[in-house]
Length: 174
Image (cartoon, rainbow, N blue to C red; front, side, top):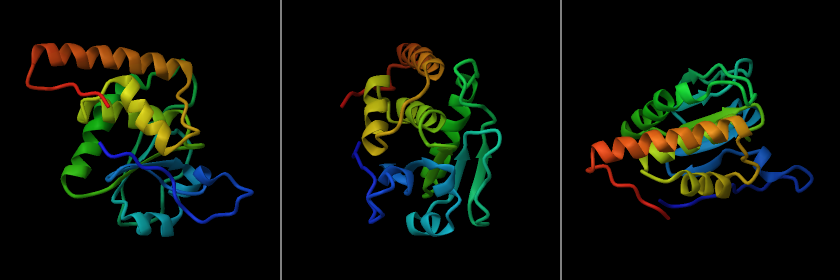
């Protein structure tokens, strides 16, 4: 898996990762809601699918983008786990059809980072540690809350059990 980070020529007074779409892989980006609704950024990165991991943040008005809402607050008691499979598979579907996906939440820190991590765990066959390291390198402010981190640990266990039942799925590490 190649690793990417944010790159843009923006004002040094504003944190770089807050103004751009941060590239996690060739086909997966993470950002905050402000950047996600910037049509120029979506066109520049050729985004075709957006996962909005919030109850209240808007979707891009850009018509060429398909969308999926994951209605959760950034609260450790929220059940994000139940969306890991659906989101991971939806992202992979967009990627397999040649698209590029953006996952975002209000600040691009907790909810979106958890979904990107879950996707990498499932579809890149990575451990939680390795998957999150890739997300964190792409978006240094990424930090799932303690509840979401616990749910990612549970998901890692679920994926490991699936791997044991189907050894053709190889788990890799970076």
